[in-house]
Length: 73
Image 1 (cartoon, rainbow, N blue to C red):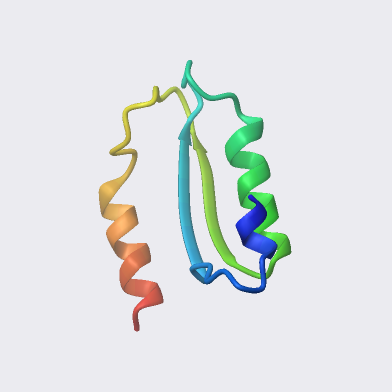
Image 2 (cartoon, rainbow, N blue to C red):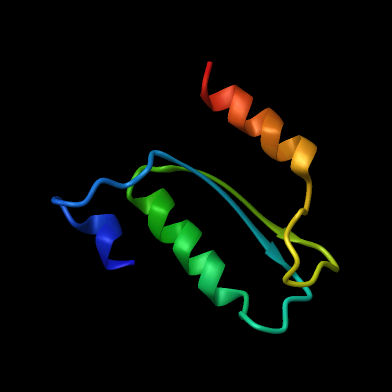
């Protein structure tokens, strides 16, 4: 979190963040605060709490690839 505001750090301009709403390892405030901090720093953030998903990833790979294509054009 500290690096987001650090003038000497290079922070990616685009962020795709997914968090499983059924994740038992990390509470909602962690990714929510991270996404909000990035947004307040002017970064492009695509954030979603994936409903009824655990900490497994692969939430919507087709959507992820479409998002990547949209920012690389």
